[in-house]
Amino acid sequence: MEKAYIQMLEEFYQNGHSVLDKIDEREMELAADAILRAKKIYVLGIGHSGFFGRIFAMKLNHVGLSAYTVFDEINPPFDKNDLFIAISQSGGTKTILALAEKAKKLDGRVLSVTSNRDSALGKLADATLVVDKVDERVDYRVLAKIGDLKNQNFLGAIFGFNIFILFYTIIVMLAERLGESAESINARHANLQ
Image: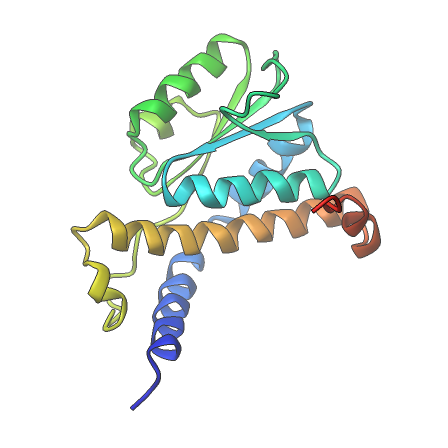
């Protein structure tokens, strides 16, 4: 009998391979352009999206950019031409939408990461990275124990894994464009803990 974590890895891999293969390369380039044009970058997601969004903000700082996660008390103000990266699988998360609208009113730009281009968030954003929720053809034998296509625990886990890979891909793209090395990136890693 195959170990559960090997089965789970295969489920994540099969889903991720299928979903990420559909990512539009031009959208990835536009997202990287938007990030590089911004003076400051603010990232927000709720739940799984929020956890992976925090990692993305950290890695943006590691490549030398100024990135923050929304709701941190020490953030500087959001200014004209700053970028708000709004992560919402559904594209309808009320908190995300309200802050995306506020970012636009402050003359900022919005990059949405969502599975629904036609959602309220997708329509509001200046640029959108579409990441499908899930490949329904995969046999989720292990992950099914936390839910199925109707359950947010399951869908959040799958979407989170996909955006984790997507965000690291963007970090690599940005590092290359900025001429960053492993050493320069590592020099910005936290060292107080």
